[in-house]
Image (cartoon, rainbow over the protein chains, first blue to last red):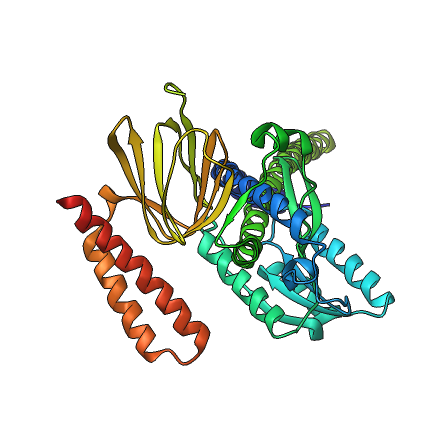
Length: 296
Length: 138
């Protein structure tokens, strides 16, 4: 049976933990709001880009001179997987879920006899993948979005992916990240970056816009596509990082909310035990005094 | 068509910078500037670093510097996807000049083609900013 002093110590320590978790929860909530606003602000750009790519891609995809970024290299032997996680833990199942999805993907590709390379964005992903797949990790990028995700950071990762592709180091590139849905839920998504998958053209809205006319291109369709496709990689990565940041803060907020509540429950039950023990001791002392007095 | 307008949108990766109906916009296209009036033929064009001029009536109501990107034009709207966008009035000439100097020294010391191309691009952007301010100041 724990002594009163031990119980007092435990209550104090759980109370200290609760203070920390509730502070983390509030910080995460503030950051979540900012991350969410940023993700929403970035949406128009990605949408317009997609629309342009849809109208371009549809016309170019089948032709023989199409750029490799959209048509592929003609093989799918080497896969690059960009695993986007957080740098920090204490956010519930956020990192674990992303890594699990990445592992499944790696497993599936290896069963098919493909070569897999991994580019880790975020420290937690690297830590969890290092044990099984350490030799496949090409590079780890840390410290992304410490304050807020900047487009230049996404562009750097995009540069890395593009230069690897230009050197023929992979054929297909996929990014694994958590798509933000709400503060309590996100969906782990694997999205193919290279070759680009142009979104399905929405015939109706396009026809309304153009009145049946076809776009003119300046300078040429190919030249624009050659410029647009590399940019699109950065934009897609940027979008993934923003969604990830929002999901991370959402997960952390939920996890810390649970932790705070659990700490509260624990304090209640410890306090109950503490009072019971104290009462039992008082009773015991009283009995001792009374039986001592009776014996005289 | 006298009362019709062009729905002009300027978007950077981080946010929607401008979204409003205007009478005309002049976009610095890769092959030369082009003006967009209502009923323009559908067009997708590349954009070089330069100034977008927004017209209300016959007056220029807004000047925005963009560091390259793409423009999509249809009969009723004009969407510009810019890598970065800043109002000419907000450009800091001192910053732009120091950017230009850094880019120039990077260009001189660049060891690979891609470094050189990057420095050249940055030189173009910085020079464009300085020119934009000079032109608007007189």
